[in-house]
Amino acid sequence: MSSLVFLLPFLILTPASTLDFRYHSNREIEQYLLQLNASNPDITHLYSIGRSVRGQQLWVLALGLSARRHTVGIPEFKYVANMHGNEVLGRVLLLQLIDDLVRGYHNNETWSLQLLNSTRIHILPTMNPDGFDASDTHCQYSQGRYNYNGIDLNRNFPDAFAGLRRQQQLDEEKRQAEVRAVIGWLRTESFVLSANLHGGALVASYPYDNSNRGSEFVGGASITPDEDVFVHLAKVYSYNHASMHLGDSCNDGRPFIDGITNGYQWYPLEGGMQDYNYVWAQCLELTLEVSCCKFPPVKQLPALWTDNRKALLAFIKQVHLGVKGRVFDGSGVPVQNAVVEVKGRRNMCPFRTDRHGEYYRLLLPGSYTFTVTYPGHEVLTETLNIPNGPDNYSALRHDFLLQHIPKTTGRSPANPTQADLTPSCNYTLHLEAGGAITRPTWAGLGVGLALVAALRSLIN
Image (cartoon, rainbow, N blue to C red; front, side, top):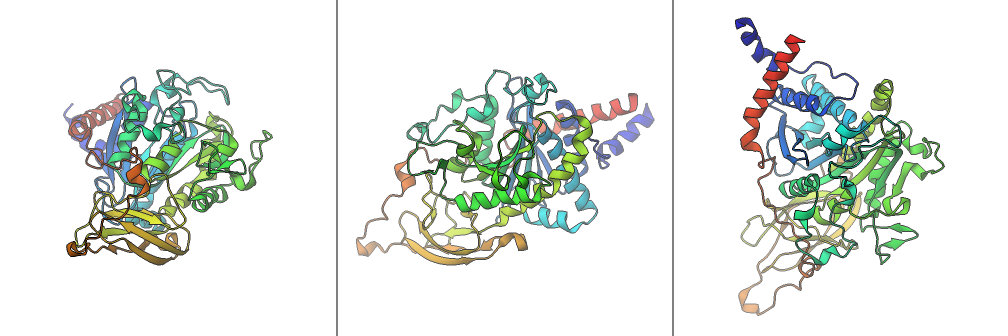
């Protein structure tokens, strides 16, 4: 027994062994994340954003040189998988991605060092662990899509096209536990770019998923003000994928030109997560359908990882598109909720600075005119020439310096923005970043589960 106690610290703190290609249970994923986090405290931080209906933790692993908390100037990126419990390849891909990033870092591989030096990457391997537990292995029609309450989580978010923009509360307390957890997560971090991994097709889908058939409705598609950026992002994934860009790899009669599609043009969807990210959290999100089969045979997993690896990494780099910086008031203090608008891009909820006074705008290379508005200050207009940031793992850095409106002028403050007239455009961040919701309880649980895992490995 004494020798077992002596070995336990080494079993817990040494790097995880090679991650095998199979479908790991929710408990196995939890143990893997706990052990990997304990072994790599310099570049990882494990936290929970909440629990599923049945009480399973929704674990997120953050990776980066400052994984525990946000660093000014470092963009926040996220991947989410297994929103539909029976669409399972995303779980495997994200675990392999974690393993790949950590190994690359420890092997001093340039690609991994550059990503982790420049980006804080958050990975949620399963958003619907209860659905996964109920799923079976049928390629298309297996059970397990819904959460434990029988609700499709990708139809349960507040929807800007369903009249909810006029309701500030958005009935969040009536949302499913997993959806409430993601909404809360989006309020703790200023995410810039995201993707949500699904299965059952092979295509990169981008917002909007819904429409009122108003000005956004163009040629059968529901177009955002950032259509050019979304098309670019979708093509980055599809053309770095082994076959997605071919457009008809599933042979199901639905060809997708370049392997991409506008969500609404494919099929209308109310209450989707990618529209919620874009409208309310100013985070550009894609839905990535990464396998024709929702539950691919285990023997196909190594090849499917190879097909997706390059695309997953290339997509993360796109978080460095455009421009980033801070807005300072007339006293030189960074300010929250300053409106930063780009001419010609009228977002439903204009982009605002976060609690650090930061803004991030994903934009393709070119010349853009910005208007910055903040109460009690002159409206600032500047034109910027933006290079291709991903080439250098950094967007253009530019701070906006505002000037107070002189009290003697008698001028009134700037006209109210669209955000001021739309009560639901609420950017208040209620919690500390990086999983403060569960931080007090994680340490004891982590050590306990890691000990259990080590003991089991010796006994079995």
